Image 1 (tube, rainbow, N blue to C red):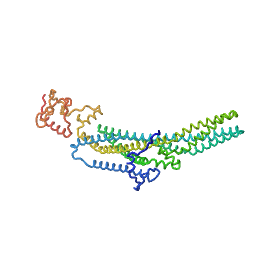
Image 2 (cartoon, helix red, strand yellow):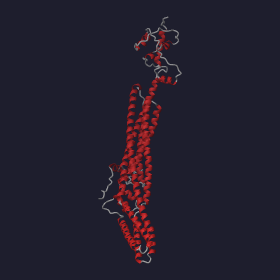
Image 3 (cartoon, rainbow, N blue to C red):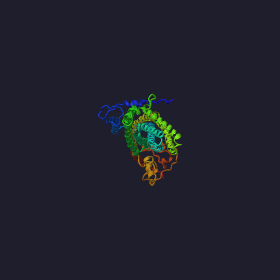
Image 4 (cartoon, rainbow, N blue to C red):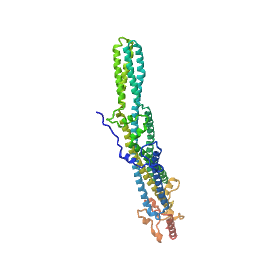
Length: 532
């Protein structure tokens, strides 16, 4: 039983994209029928890409307005809002990173689906191209056999059977049958131009798809690298990495909107083709192949007879008649004309080879093989291909959202870094508990070790010749080591061991606080008598 005919039904996203309004650059409606050679139709696809460019413009305008507001608005309570700003930057970066990772995941899926659909299209085109090439080879091969090889054998047999009229009449009948075969073969379509077009289309499609797939892959890697650089910038509080992230994020934002424009135009144009692929193929092949033949392959209806049926039937009958004639000549003429046996056996081999070619030709001309290739090609580009383009469009939107968020959080992070460095600048450089001092000491190991101003040596200044009374190291609380009585008229207690060596560091003092402390200390030292 013949296999049930498969039919192509456009998916819902093709119908939805095909319904998108088509406008040219003058905002005039354009017919949505797929016609890539028409200038108005090209302008309608370009207009869809320009809509994405307008989206980029609005995005950049929003970012500019936001950055201007952030730079112009100064907070009056930076100390109170510093912790809240740091939390805001951290959570904003986390959310943007999650959106970016989700966008890359969606993009990988869409890129794979598009690539699978395009490769299915190329594979189907190559199969159809192989079938068309095989048909042309079989037709040209059989024509060559009938015109040249068979004619040579018949000419030699005509000379041998010149004295026998009945044998000469048989040879004329065979020559007439070969002429009928040549006429029928010449009536079959020649697919040479179609083969050249399919080969060019397959090569160009594979070339474009290779670089499209590679470009998106590099874009995915760039997005992930920028997210990693953002994490490092926030973790190390590096202004250089933050500036690099902002620049790369702006570039990636532009690339995301550009990819969205290309995906939108490609998806809508492909959907217009997928809405009525039969119509486009009929219009494209008009003048090259008969419309009846194209419809036979596009629809492959069981109720429609093959347009090659009459030609193939005549070919087969002519071959059968010629084979019967050759067998009769072999049986009756060879005993009388032994030299004719070689040519008659050559004709018999030629007819047998032609019969084999006839069966191959009938199989290749059957609509089921080419119709399956047609459905596979349309299904690959209209299902997987357009679905992948939709996911790539979603990736572009999510990536634009993620990097817009990161760019908005960049100035807040930069302000947070500047505020933190300003707090460190207010601390004495000689304070051993200042992180900047530790960094300086790490880069300058030749510099002597810094001591706390709470030690005896730093407290006495020029009175280094006087030795204080030695104290026993104890685990007393900080209040005993930093006795506040010395600041209010009491007897101060001096320590000959720095607090930094006891595991109990004092709080960080600003230069102004230290100056106040040293002035009070010098005043009390003038009234203090050291024991001998």
